[in-house]
Image 1 (cartoon, helix red, strand yellow):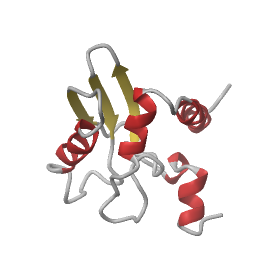
Image 2: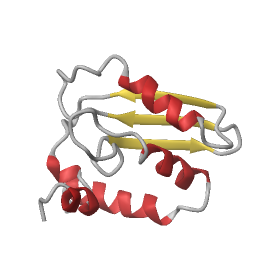
Image 3: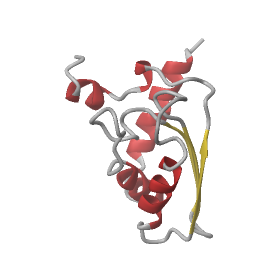
Amino acid sequence: MMSESGRWKQAQAHDDADDDGLKGRIIEALRTVYDPEIPVNIYDLGLVYGLDVDEHAGRIEIRMTLTAPSCPVAQTFPATVEDAVLEVSGVNDVHVELVWDPPWSRDRMSEAARLQLGML
């Protein structure tokens, strides 16, 4: 039985493999948004839990979290993410849902993020 962390890493590898379509361009846009407290982008930090892309309608649904529920940008950060994704050609509508379950942990970080932070 695969752990939650293992499933997440497998899904992340799948997301990264699909880098030539709209979803790949959205992932690249997400990688331009950085956590305000940790110098790593939100995608590689593992803050993005779900990314649903309707290419035909240009509608994007993002489920994400923050490193802590008490994060001072909790009220404004979803709009920052929406703005970054709206810049992507082919995107007409973005909805970001902030979720707290499951809580974020370092296990969700990509290998690149761990390396950047000196954790490998």
